[in-house]
Amino acid sequence: MRKNCRRKIRPLSFRFFSLITVLLVLGGCATDDVRHYLRPNAEAAGIKKIAVLPLETLTQDQYAGEKVRRMLISEILSRRADVIEPGEITSFLVALQKPLYRLEMKDIRELGEKLGADAVLLGSVEAYKMTSGLTVSYPDVSINLRLVETSSGKIIWSAVSTSGGASFWTRHFGAEGLSLSETARKVVKEAVDTLPLSDKTD
Amino acid sequence: MKWSKGLSLALILFTLVMNWGCKSAETRYHFAGDTDLSYIKKVAVLPLDNLTNDKFAADAVRQVVINELLLTGLVDVALPGDAAVAMEKAGVREASSLSAPKIKEIAGALKVQAVILGAVEKYGEVRSGSFTAPEVTITLMMADAETGSILWSVTKTEVGDSFTARHFGARSDSLSELTQKVVRDCVGTLQKYSR
Image 1 (tube, chains in turn green, orange):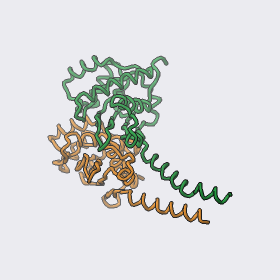
Image 2 (cartoon, chains in turn orange, yellow):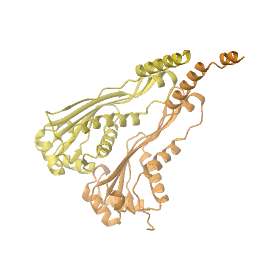
Image 3 (cartoon, rainbow over the protein chains, first blue to last red):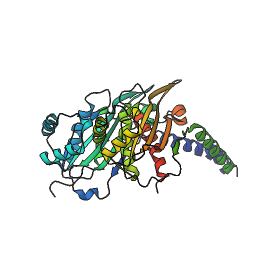
Image 4 (cartoon, rainbow over the protein chains, first blue to last red):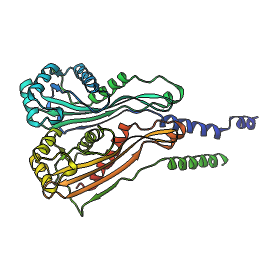
């Protein structure tokens, strides 16, 4: 009787099947990635007020930089840090008459003095699109951010945050993934999570 | 006994299949002589040459290079804006036309011990049969601020597909993820000569 039971269960096939399933699922897991640098003792810098500059758009979507910038502002504000009014930054940049990629240390210091910002957040959006695979489309968002202390002109934080491709379940079973905006919000949130912020109420 | 034999066979098969499927591209790098790079505390990453059809490729890769260099903890990086202005003042439009005296001039203006330059040769999706995967090829070099000579150079190509992605539909890297991986591997070679 016992012998018959063992034959029916066939433990080798079961284990083999389980192993393959686990590996396939793990191989298909979408993992978002934030690689960030934080200058030693940067937390002590006590960044309370940030000027979020327009981000460079390095994608086909010409508004990607502005979309991500707004998400960044809202995410920073939700952490009770203060943000300089975007309009004030625009006025400063217009008066400066320089494109973003030519902003020097002295310009950042001047911005800090004039607008009262402890740090300037700048960066770029490298991907902001729906990527089409053979059977499935998935959002692809990648941003690159740098926080520059206005007093020293040094980069105190830097991060690259990227969304992953379509998951195993989306590819094979049509499971609903995040939309492009949701993915962008997630990428921004994960990047800001690593930002050394001080509560403005401190 | 039968059990363990079967399991071992399955594991061996699986390992072999995974190894065949893993295309780990080699990172080719070179250091000039017995170079000690410990004196380099700050570098400037100059705009990379874009040898692709994607007009944003060089800028996108440059941003990642800056982040990865900072992440090594070995060097500080000059602001990209400062580098752009220093190049302009030196009358250099493209990093590919840099001569040793110009490198010295730019590095002196930026107060850095070395400059990073290079090129993006491939940045996009490639189709192979019914499968599409991203491909990235970059070359980076580090030039000494005092002499203008090349201290370090590295090149890497990687395609973002894998055996499991190709055959079982597992997730493959996106172009941005692959770029990060390639840059990380390239910059990682610097760690080997940091003392």
